[in-house]
Amino acid sequence: MNVVRRHRLEHGMTQAELGEKTGVSRNSVISWESGSCPRPKRLLVLAAVLGVMPRELLQELAERNKGV
Image: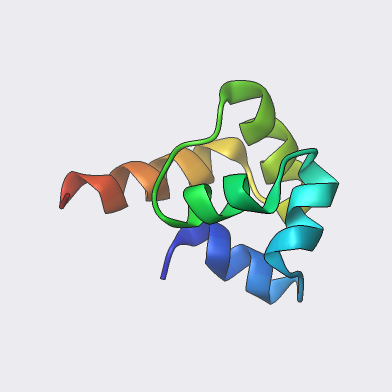
């Protein structure tokens, strides 16, 4: 399971709710959950909302994309 989706579900948020909290559309959240990497500014906001370090998100996204 994608790191963004896993953390979102752990916090009991929908894609729309995460989008609102991070200032992006639901489509952006869908894109992140499909493996796209958020822009640096959004990555910081996303990490704060999900309660994780930005490095953790980047590492997990990078590892997931290695197999692509």
